[in-house]
Length: 347
Image (cartoon, rainbow, N blue to C red):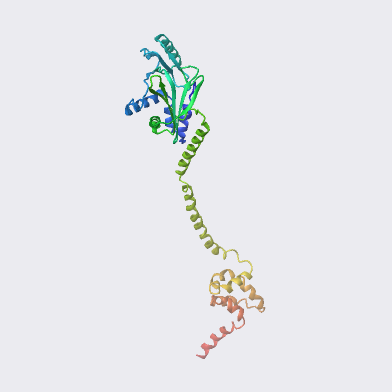
């Protein structure tokens, strides 16, 4: 975040939506205020010791009203949260310090003060994933801010001490995949750590293309880890259970179709004859009630004299053999009626 820029609302929105990120969104939100980060460095310095983790002394003022105690001069006053040397003023006496306090009153923000270190060069140790680099920057223009004006930058060897600094700082706020430690090597031969940067650090040096590739690989590996955790077969389970249900519903449909075939309105005579040949024992009983009007109509033209009165008698005597007796033996039907009349006379 630079001067007059605050994107915390976007960070909150990303965290609200659960979007994954390299350097967790919690750590990015915590890095929005440098005094908050410096408080973490104080705890690290207490655990490791000043010799292993030489942290510069710092005084925090929550507002301009508290800027009454006069520090040891010269001091560097840092107003608010800013990068690239913005909001940093070197104060040599208490008159200038009161003037800076009035500026802090207008900004309505906090301020910090640090003792001014007559530096020989600046040190920057960066970590991108598992890649480490250390740089040394020396001012040529003579400005006390080595990041402004002309300066000479060169890469130096990565020592165990530098590696310890950046590794311990990368454990802050649950872990940092990308971070950098800034220190000052004074003319007294001592090192002073004064700042830690997260993924908002700028890339410097001749290996910026290589550093971008390391960041790309880190992002891709993070995406692969997140995507591998998503349950892929879960959406296919409901479809697998629905398929047998659809098949089971279709099975009773063909069973319902056969009972629907006989009731539809008798119609022509020929389909009934074909059904009677394929199913002789079943069709005389099922097809006889609807077929009474059809079979007598075929047998009636064979009897011109008038056997219409005798047909109902034959149907009443035997229903199961009605279709065969009427077609094969049409004439001998009156004969059995005369026989019972002759037998009682003989007796």
